[in-house]
Image (cartoon, rainbow, N blue to C red; front, side, top):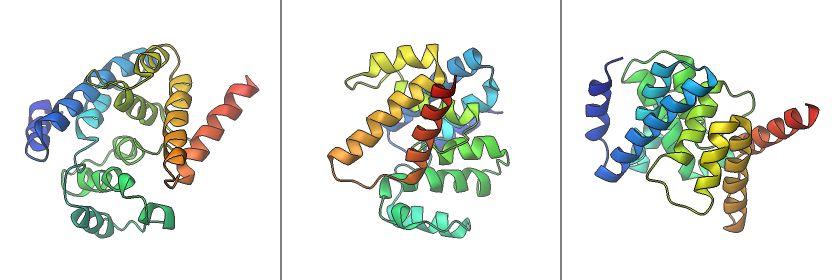
Length: 190
């Protein structure tokens, strides 16, 4: 992986704040990969690229998604906050030529989560929450959980996301609910 090459690509696709966030997510992903035994290079790359379509025009996001052969379900159609992750997964696959399904899925599901996430997918989801520039109520709790138990961190992040969406009368995609329920069931079975 040519880190500098991918950093130059994203630097041209986003503002300075988003670029710093992407670099920080990549750093957090590397730390988490080391803890949880995931491929460090994949974690670094997925972290760098996870928001590669975050700051492009919404019409262009939809075009990328459509060109990539993805048909949005009704919730996705009405949840534009999910589009950048879906478009990003298509962009890295079709434009950047990255053909690693784990990296592609880590980008696609870093916002919503989903059932049956790989460890890399969980790492990118979590790293997005704990990157060093993040400042929200509970971020330090999330960071502690992330370095102790990835599923505990996932639950905390999903609770945060789902309750925030519900509080603001926003749609909640079933992938987030499925992810949340799967982790809860798994933890109760232990």
